[in-house]
Image 1 (cartoon, rainbow, N blue to C red):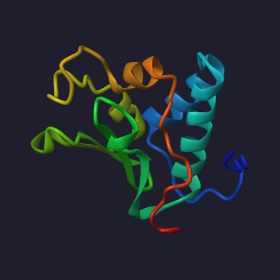
Image 2 (cartoon, one colour):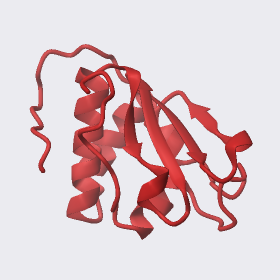
Image 3 (cartoon, rainbow, N blue to C red):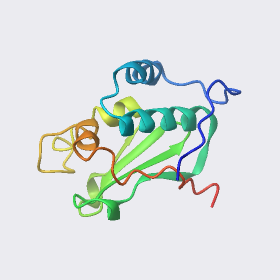
Image 4 (cartoon, rainbow, N blue to C red):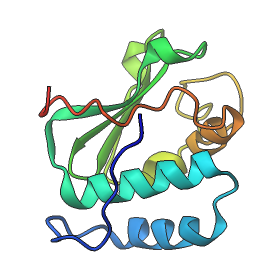
Length: 135
């Protein structure tokens, strides 16, 4: 199912400068169609879709590493590993989440940022229609 992305609609959330730069960069430099889709949708959602009850971006059941990604509020992200519950991280924006080294924070035994990890799997398992505010 494709997510209906509408650009330049009424802006509800003013993005962090780091995310503004990230979205502008990825608009030009995405390495695959799935990556472009991921950034287009996250951009739209961060600006227009508040997630007070959380927005599940990746379920721990969708990957063998048991990594989960949750967007909360407008643009904050929680990243964790079902098998390492005491190591969950909370970031203030997508850029911060994607540049987090998963080995350094204890979520994986491989030296990868979250962005590298998503690219390695070509964004398979990412969910776009799982905002609990809408369910």
